[in-house]
Amino acid sequence: MGLLLFAHYARPYTKFLTVPHFADEDAFTDHLIAIGITKPKAVRLACEAAVAGSRAHHGLLAGAVIVSDGAGQFDVFLHGLCWIHAERLINRLITVTEEQRAAVALVRHLIWWLYYDLKLYRADPTARAKASLKARFDRIFGRTTGFAELDAALARLKERKADLLVVLDRPEVPLNTNGSEHDVRDPVTLRKISGSTRSEDGRQCRDTFLSLKRTCQKNGISFWTYLADRLGIVPGSIVWRDNLAERSATIWLGFSGRGTSMIGAFRQQIKPGFVCV
Image (tube, rainbow, N blue to C red; front, side):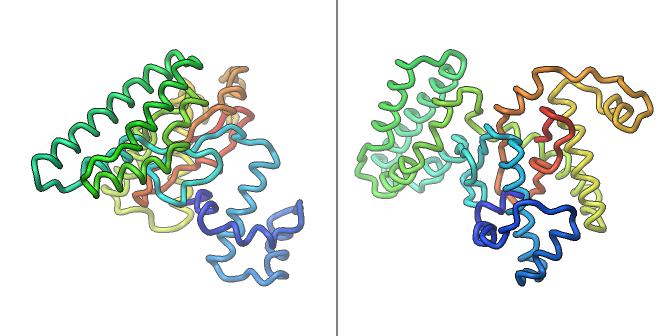
C-alpha cells in the first residue's frame, strides 16, 4: 500500500523520529538501529512515517486530497469518500418485502439525484447551492424508513458527511475513484500476463515507469520525449509549463483498497510541480 499505510499503522513510529534531518540513508538507518527499530516491518513503517514528514516539510502535495473507497488505511491527510462505493451499502441490502424494496429504491433515487446535483455544483459552485446540498444530504441520510438495515446504512453514511461532501469546499475533487481505477489497469494487466515481478527491484522499476508514463499522459507530454529529456539524449526537448506547480497544489489522489499496487503517488517528484499520481 506504500506511504498510505502510514495513516493506519505508522503513526506510533513518528515519536521515534526525533532527529529532523539525516545526511543520507546510512545516517537514517543508524538512527533506527540506535532506537531499536530493526525488524523489517517496523523499519518499513518508520520509513513511511519519515516520507510523510518529508512531504509535509517540503510542501509537496500540500493541497492533495485522497479520494478512496472507504478503506481505513487511506483515511489520511484531506480525505474524500467515493460516492459509488458508498452507495453500494444501500444497493447490496437484502430486501424481503415490497415495502423494503420500495424504501431502498426511493433512497437510491434520492442519493443519485443528489450525486447528479453535486456534479453540476462542481461546474458552477455557489454559496447558495452549497447550503442547499448540505441540507439535502442531512434530509436523505437522516431519514427513518422503518427498514432497520437501511436505517443503519443511512446512519453509517451520515457519519461520513465530511468525506462525502469534500467537493463542496474543493469543487475540483472528483466524486468517485474511477480515475484511479483506470490508472491501476496497467499494472493489473501486466500482473495477469506475467504473474507479477520476480524481485522487489523489478516491482519498483515497473511501478516507477508506469507512474512516469501515466503522469506524462495527464500533463500532455510524450513519455518518450520526457525520457529523452531526462536522460540527456535530446536535452531541452520539453518546455515545462508554469502552471504545473499550481496544478500539483490542487491535485487529487484517488485510491481503491483492493490490494492493487499503488503507483508512485508520493514517491516520484520528478520536477517542481510535476507529480506522479
